[in-house]
Length: 294
Image (cartoon, rainbow, N blue to C red; front, side):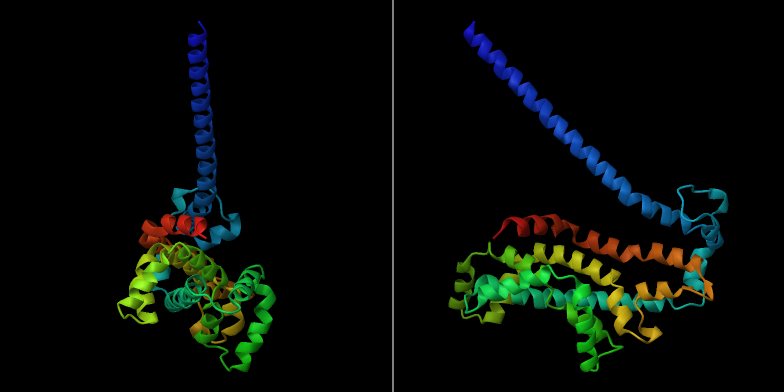
């Protein structure tokens, strides 16, 4: 009787654990569904508005009602065939984003590799400075950076847009955490084979950092693509405007081009979507690996 009672109690505990696990799973599913809806709704609203006349936005604003009777391709015809600078702004943003991401990943990985692979005097102090920089909002250093770019005669140039973000503190921290899990014997093996320090980095280290590069490429790419405040401060010529600046010029006291603004905003999502699809294979692996190593 006692044996059966223990078995029944064990089965009851097992069933309770299973119900609890199912409850947690259901709870997480509900949370993720709600988050997905909150993310999808703005994209849906923007997509629907891109098929409606611009005047409709002025009268009714953005709303969930599709109103298919008002749909047309006039806005898209304006986007592809109209007389405007949208595609110039789009090209500028693409070029700046690619340059910023490539150089930021390269420079930040160099710095992170130094912190992770080598021991030198002042290493901990310098890394503490990197951590401190992560806690400083960009708005705090924005004016000193502006003054520095002005002193260097770089105003109204893409150099001024790119240079301040090359050694990105959070990217350095992430790469450093990822590289702490790297076996030091790999570096020693490279040196024994006669490879230079740069050869070790480019031929041995970079291949094992692909997941980390993919994760940071997405995050830095989003930041560079959506960057507005800094380009607004340093760029003067309209032909050098990025997409965020260009779209903002469509709203002015002398007239608002909502048709181009809405369809252009909808189309601007595509590059970031392509970037995520291209690197999503490594994204989760890179984020989780960088979070647990160190």
